[in-house]
Image (tube, rainbow, N blue to C red; front, side, top):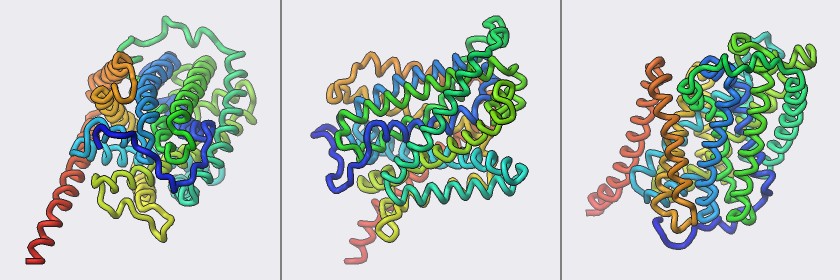
Length: 442
């Protein structure tokens, strides 16, 4: 698939999304996966400078978004960013390993966000029991899988509702908390070292992973060459403004220790001094909407990714099929893995793994872009800057978080080796099948 004419979207597929709807799929994924789950963890590293960490992560995401926008305008595809990998590296092992990495990371992130939904739902109706958390996590994955089977129009309608509710309430939260800031809590003199702030970007970048989901909407956009870049930039702009404003509001209301102790409920706790107990429950409801939307968005790429990779021989044909002619096997497999992970593992401990994998994948995509930038019209200087900023975050993350958390490093190595093994194993099987057939015929 190297060179040649731009890839085209299947004309038989219904084009049903607008720029706003495509952007909202990304916004729902980003906001649900990020702001409600990361403030405490990021605060442990960056202190009250978390807003700076979000801002830096937004800039890096914007640079990567430029690469994706140029790629997507030239090669719109149901395979999303995996199409870009194929254009940059061909149909070899690099593309296969990245595809398995992305599928695995997507399942991890979806499972983690589902657990976050389960935690909020369980706190509301089941006294926060572990059994209740897991039951609600499974339920939200099943419901969102059904919506994705219904098609992109159902996903878009659900995400539009989610984003309107979440942005509306977060705007109220940001305005009220920013109006009552305690500037002493945000004093620069209390900020940690630059190294710590940069290291925390590996965590806060997790909050921007959802923008990659937008690349998979190309198959549902009437004019993806023009609309996909707009959707990417719109989603990143909305998410960055929300994150910075909310981080300032939270850390300008609570001390760093209070944010860390509050964990995933930091926004609800920060809303209570200004809006009272109603504010606490309002933010809890917002978290339910946001995490449900992120679960929905997390599942959305599975069908297009699996079907595209199966069509070019990177995945087994089974992953490209549909059960009953409607339910994509890739979607069902991703949902099943997310359910197993959400029930059997403490996913809050591996949030950084998903972020690190995404940073590696995004860097490789943009590095591959340098090989074909003349075809996409991208500026190589911007692509190089995107790669360098991402590598700086990865190296800093490796020198701090991975050194202090060896289990995270081990998990990353295991996931990488598993992706390599799956790619090598499938391709060996695929090559051996014709030989066996010839032997049988003779």
